[in-house]
Image (cartoon, rainbow, N blue to C red; front, side, top):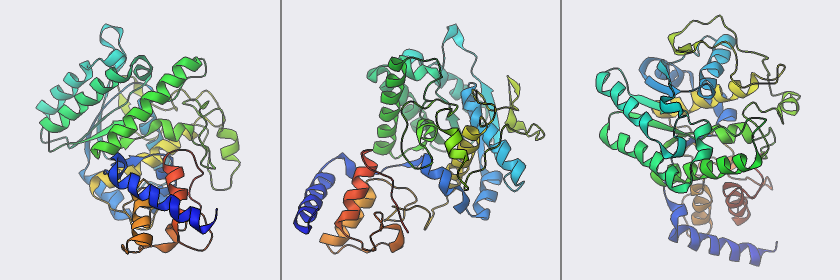
Length: 359
């Protein structure tokens, strides 16, 4: 692409971004990038999470993967003693999974807990499992609106949204497509409304090279083996059952395996990765504002989103401030920071291009 085309593309992107929804706040999203950023969380923020986060977590079997992932991490390094978590199993009233067809019964269960634990809870999350594929777009809005009402009624509590799992091995392509659509609707809601989001679907579906595998399952059986062959990866076969923290128990009893991990050799990996992303997200919820952690985070806000190409374009064309960490802004790794990096980031953010590649 010649310089004229690069500049023209940059100006078009700038006008579209500043005029449209893309310029909104993007929230704090723990996706596959957060897995890699886990090691950058400072020890003092790990301590802060363990001491200060008091959480209520409503979940089903798939949602327990967060707890199982934390167990693996704690077994590796006991400084990662998890925060206080009151985990409660969803009891399937009338046979419903959480959020089936837009059902919001779960919101009443959360309200009951909060009304009786006002001093003992400052963060709430809930896993959305199979219910996601039964919802059309309007029913998904009803689900998300119920979350928004909770945020309005309990302003002292932080609420962490979650995308759904991807699919089980035996689920049809129609189900898979419904979940992918619903997950993207949740992501957009969280971008538009500046929410905390645990992006289960992105973590399950992204391979080690950053590409997304739409055929991935919630046990990552389509890519785990390749991932584990990389030298940067540890691939525990199971979750150790020696840790006896109250966060690791619910009505299903002790969770000493990775739920839905059909692959015996690599099954623990999906839980391990989610545990890392969860620690990163909890540190953000506790107040950590990371500096140089992510390639592509040009505006140094702790996440890679559409705000980063806007930041670069403002710097290049409108004399805006330069990136605090220039190496993190050279996303196409050509030793220059120019509109090509902004175009590269736009393609990545909108899911059509490769992940940032900094030196």
